[in-house]
Structures are given as C-alpha cells and as structure tokens.
Length: 429
Ligand code: HEM
Image (cartoon, rainbow, N blue to C red):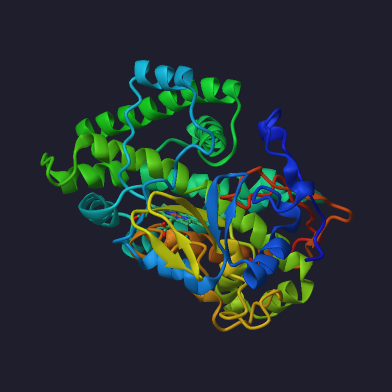
C-alpha cells in the first residue's frame, strides 16, 4: 500500500512491545497489510510470541471460527491486553465497578438472552427514525468547518459526529461528550493496547467513574423513562431478573456507550482517507451518489476500523491445517481476511464499484455480529452524501503522515489533514 504511515507508541510509552523492526508485529500498522498477505500465503495460522495469541489470517478460516459457537468462546473479546495489576483491580473493586461479561464477551444462553433484549431497541426501526436528525447534525458540523481551508478531519469532524448520534440513542446530554470521549479513550488503551502500571491505575479510577455514570443514568430512567436504550431495556425487563438483571442492563449501557462511537469515528476517518487517496473513487461518488452505499462497504473491507478480534478455543481445533489446543487465545485478523484473494478479486485495489465488498468481516459474523451495523452504515452514508455535496474538491493535505493507535484490535488513525476546497451549496441545508 502506498500510504505514508508512521508507528506511534505515545499511548503506551515505556511499553515493551516495540519489536516491529525485528519482524512481524500485530501492533505495527505501517506494514500490517503486507505482513498479512505474506502470512496468508506462507503461514495462514501462526502463533505470535509478542501477544501470546494464535493469529488466523484467511477468510474461510476466520469465518469458520466466527460461526463455531460450540468449540469457540467470545469470552476474551474485551480482556485487557496486559494482565491487570492487583492495585488497579483493587481500585475498581473498592469503587464498586461491577460491569459483567454480558454481550460481545459472553456465550450461550446468556448471550442470546441479552442480545434479544438489546436488539429490541438497537434495530433498523430505531435507527431509520433517526435519519433526519443525523442529517441535521452532519450539516451543522459541515457549517462549523466551512471556511477553514485545511482541517484535521478527525479532530474537527469525524471525532464528534458518532458520539453525538449515540447520545441520542442513550439520551445522554451533549455537554457530557468530552467526559465520555476521555473515558472511552482510556478504555481503548486498557482493553485493547498494552498498558503500563500508571495507565492501569489511573484508568481504573476512570472506569469506576464511567461505570457510575451509567448506573446513575439507569437509575434516572427508572424514575423518568425516555425514548432511549436504558428506558427501552427497563420496559423490556419489566422487573424480571430472569429476562435481564439490572446489572446486566447497566453493563449493556456501559458497553454501547463505548462500542457505538469509537469504532464509527475510526471507520469514517479510514473511509475518507481511502476515498481521497484513491481519488478516482472520490470523483466517482461525487458524480454518482448512488455509489455511496457500496463505497461504505468497500471502506469497511479495505480499511476496517476493527482489524483483529479475539476468541478462545473451548476444545482442540484444527484450522488451516494447524492444531490449536483447547484454552488458547486467537486473534481473527479481519484486516487480513478482508483482503484474501480467495474471496475478493484483486483485493489490494480499493474500488467503490466492487460487487461483493459487503462480505467483509469488519463487523464480525455469526451470533455476535455487530448490533449497531445498520446505524454505522446509515451514519457513514449520510455523512458521505452531505460531505461530497458540500466539498467535492476536498483533497488530502500534501505530505501528511498518519499515525495509528497502538493496538492490534483497531485501525484508528490519530489525524487526517484535509484541504476542504471551495464549498458548494445545494440549498438543501
Ligand atoms: C464502524 C462501526 C462499527 C464497527 C466496525 C463495529 C464492529 C463490531 C465487531 C467486530 C463486533 C463483534 C462481532 C463478533 O464478535 O462477531 C461488534 C459487536 C457489537 N457492536 Fe459494533 N461496530 C461498530 C458500530 C457499532 C455501533 C454504532 C453500535 C451501537 C449503536 C455497536 C454495538 C455493538 C454491540 C452491542 C455488539 C455486541 C453484539 C453481540 O455480541 O451480540 N457497534 N461490533
């Protein structure tokens, strides 16, 4: 890939994970796609010493594991990448942190029961009703950047939009955005990056505050129901713990308040970057906006916000000709599977006209497939429609180098400098 990228470890200064030069590292974003292409050819399933995980790279193998709910567990999907120090655990315990493994990181009956509850509100019906409000939010954000010349599209645009939308779903006031964003950033480091002792201890305090924020939100909705996720779950549960306990409900809120925006922010940033890098694709969607839904899928495929997702073996398994014993941790390399030429023709080409891009695995597959997928798709579609109408001449700022967060789970750029070009007004806003 011809994109300029640099390795950045500022989120994890002092961490021991810096051996990229010595060979493959799942943290090293600069050459991750080339490394994975080699792996698919030469060692499609391999053990990575750095993380202690088996890495599965081919599409069919990743898909088979995602669908094997008897022998494969999702219990480890949000586990801390570094074992949590007892001091941090003590802070969380003392602070009353009580999030459980209830949704993306649980299996079996509990998962089915909690997923049914969440899906009673997180569904296309709820999301499509939000379309006019989302469009309004996007137009206001475009008004704010208009006239700025060059912007950091992440800091100035894609950072806020998904959280604003998510706050509507959760009935959370917009003025809490900075707080929630800061907690979410900490949670990304704790769960998905190697973390230092100091990060764990200060992060533990943040997670206690984040948890109590969700507890208070749920308590408030018990007294003052609204049209939001917590109120819908309370109505669904109707006081019956066998349907959903209050603590499970609070954990779902705690989960969605994180999962529903960080990923979409990165996905949007990746999409803009790819469309503007492979410019004829940008020109194509400006000329024909009916291509935008396909462009969204191709961005999910080519530069997904989730590039590696975890699972654990419950039994000995054979995958890609490799034996993996029971009790082992696995990284499913979505980033690799999405560029597997056994599934996608000419996979290293970014092409908004690709017919089967929707087969990407960026939002998982099987029983855990992302519940927010229709919302993420809708947001991205609206944002690209509005942005291309307003700034069709936008281009990447010259010489921009893009760093990524230091994690093998997300592909999360830290900035995206873009020259907006002359705005067009369609009279729509
Ligand atoms: C671009 C944006 C997003 C990406 C890339 C993404 C990705 C993912 C992935 C990889 C999973 C795990 C799938 C698996 O284990 O098979 C997941 C699960 C989940 N996502 Fe998303 N997600 C996004 C947006 C959202 C949004 C907007 C929401 C909420 C409004 C959301 C809510 C959830 C929930 C609740 C689950 C757990 C589902 C389950 O285990 O049953 N996600 N997502």
